[in-house]
Structure formats: C-alpha cells, structure tokens
Length: 293
Image (cartoon, rainbow, N blue to C red; front, side, top):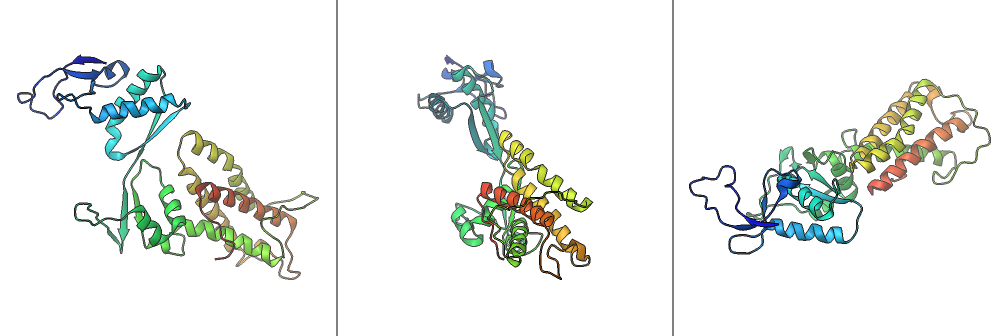
C-alpha cells in the first residue's frame, strides 16, 4: 500500500478530474491494469477496501483454495481481487472466480421484466413456490454459469422431452416400473452368479455412456462446473428412452418377456446400472427420483 495519485477513469473528463493523494494498493505489480484506491479523499474506505478485508479474513481461515461466485456485472473486479489475494498470500492462483450470468424469466411466452424500484420482482422463494424445488435446482444447474439462462415457467411444468427434469425423472420411474413388475426392489443390490452377458450395439452404446459418469464427476468437480451433471443425466436418459421405444415394435427389445413375465439377468443388470447413475447424479444435484410418475 502507498499514498499516491491515480489517473482519471476511462470516460471521465480529464479537465474535470482532480488528482489528490489517496491510499492505494499497487495492484499493477500483480497483473492489474491500474492501482486501486483503498480510501476516498474524505478518508472513508472504498468498497474495494472491504473486499480486501473480506479476503484477508478468508485467508486467515487457512483454506487451500478460495472461490468467489460473482454476478456478471462484477466481472471487472476479478483482476483487482485476484491481485490482492496474491499480495496477501504470496501465492498465485489461490483465488478462483466464477462468473454467473443473468437468469431471464419467461412467463406466458414473454420475458418477465422485473423492477425493484416499481416493486415488480420475483424472489427465489417465489420461484420455488411456483415450480417446486426440483425444477428450480435442475433447470438452474442445467446451463453453464457463464451463459444466460432462460427460465420458462411453462416448459418446466411440461411432461415432455422439452422439460429436462421430467425427462430424467421419467427415465428412473420407467426402470422402477420394470422392477415392480418382476417383484424386485430397485433399491436393493442384485444377486447374480453368472455375468456372461451378450449385449447388442444399442445396449453397448448406453453402457459406454454409463462408463463416462466418473469422468463427468471429475470434470464438474475440478472445473467447478456443476452443469455437466444435469447435462450428462439428460443425455443418458435420452439414450434410454430411445432404447425403450424400440420395444414398441421389437419384442426382443422389451425388458419383460411377455410369455413368462420374467426378465433376463443381462437386462436386469443393464437397467440397474442406468438407475444407479441416475439416482447418484440426482442426489448430487439435490433432486428427487420418484419411482412412480
């Protein structure tokens, strides 16, 4: 920190700008484009000074990594905050900043414009009351945080492929219905002695998708990008529903044998593997997986 003068901000009239001595942080030493004021001319603290104190407190609590979630309108603060954390900790890459873009609410096919000044706005509590916590969680997490999200009230209530929450939950419910029809509990472990199975190309394609699940979790965790999980679950559910629909015209693709009302072990393991991943993913996201819909 030092006492010095800073140039007029971009867009400010230089003739009107008065250079005064201020308490500054030399953030240019840490990659920022200019030094930042910690005190105003009347000696009161700037917002940035509060940020410095806050991050110093986080560092004093000895976290390995600091994570900030910033709104899109605060993306310009990343350089100065990163600079001050590096100065205080003497470490680079100690702070990770994730920028979250805006959410646009769509109601009756039209954007719902909010204004706090007019008292015309929707709180998160209102949103949960309107569409439920499952839809709120799943849809909000279904897009990357750096992409604007259109939250359509109508679509999140639809029982169709257009509603990703319903589509994934329906996948689990369909599998549960197969287990019920053969008097098995989907929550129980399978007891199978012989695993000498032969799967066709379409089944192998789904099993390969299942094998990607640990990679999905790894990426979502390391990159701090939870949207990979709902996106993956939707893709897996889509593969499953496509396979399920084949049974409408091809009896060999049906899970339960129409003659003896039984299911083969290979099909049982196939379904159990899919249900395990769906259940695991939805639990991570914090969304229910109903067995009946």
